[in-house]
Length: 161
Image 1 (cartoon, rainbow, N blue to C red):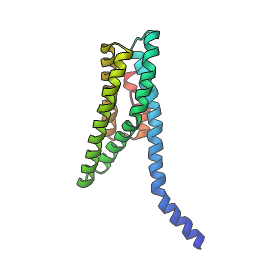
Image 2: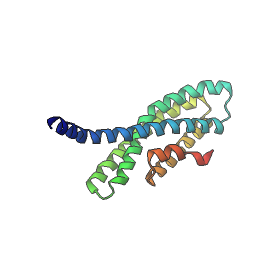
Image 3: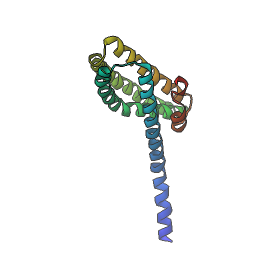
Image 4: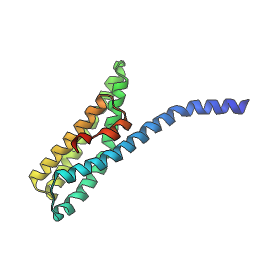
């Protein structure tokens, strides 16, 4: 009896953690798919020479690594914002976190813009940053419309291919 009660209590306490882990796993899976689609779009959009590719892709990979967590965090915050639309205090806290994320992202993007300018021409670097910003905005709009990470992984950027 004690053992059964312990198992039920353990499962009850563990279920929110498992649910949160499930959300995190879904975001990671969606992020991997977005990353592949985004990279394919960049390849399709830019006609880079071999020398430009050699200079661009290491910077791109570093940029992706630097922004990956912030992007996933923003998507999680945006989904939480939608879910808590009736809780004013929670919304205020989420909005502050989203604004903080925006500031951090802007700093990282500014730093990497300088690196992209060195790897490519200033015009190409500007074009890449605009493309990246457009894709990020599209993704955030889809999350804002209520798409789940699973739906995002299947639908994101598909209209652009």
